Amino acid sequence: PRMCQRLKAIMNLACSDKFGTGMPLLASNPFQLPIPPDPEPKSWEVPPLTGTQLAALYESMPEYDRLSVLLRVSDFNLEARTMMVNHSVCRGEHDLGELRLGPTKSKHSKRVCPLPDLLVPLVREHIANRKDESSPYLFQSRRGKGPLAPTTLGNHFRQAREQAGCTTATFRTLRVTHATLLMQNGGTIRETMDNIGDSTQEVVMRHYTRTVQEHQRQVVNRMAVGMTSESKTLQHILGVQ
Image (cartoon, rainbow, N blue to C red):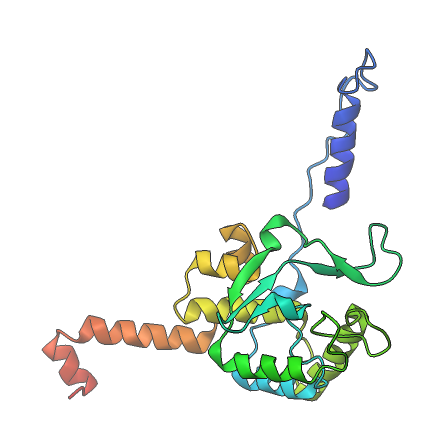
């Protein structure tokens, strides 16, 4: 689909005189085929992780990068219990050179997220036990002063998911789990968008939230209780005291 869209856009440009050459290169756009729909990614079939799976995944990661959430110590305000996302890790403009802090994927990716109270002591302990206390990075490379390489983190994650028994999980699954559980626990769509750094409701609902059958069952049971509570006949049939 992306290639078709790109080719169609190029042909449209060739049919215009946008660059002031005096005449278009083409009289009409020869690309008349319908744009094929985006295929549904296989990640949509992966459900959110359960608490047991999350705990197993955490325990299976190496201790020095199991809290892999952000990049710098200064990204955390432990007194206010917040963490900031201001950067990404990259190798420069042409993807060459040493790892460094670069811009986020989009302006919406920059955000301040509330940090759960129970994580504060874990973050404090991690900061205190870093190999190089002079480094600004929360997750450090073992061989240098730069940030932890994404490939290293990816290898650790793949090994951990095998040990944890959730072999289909990816880092995207963690985002799905966060978004789904946040909304199930009362978070609004706006709060979910802010937490995962996305600007549209459609993306959040289409790509990052899932239906959890057990939660759905709890909801319909509560709904049924509310609907039958005023009927003495139904209460008698159901055996409700």
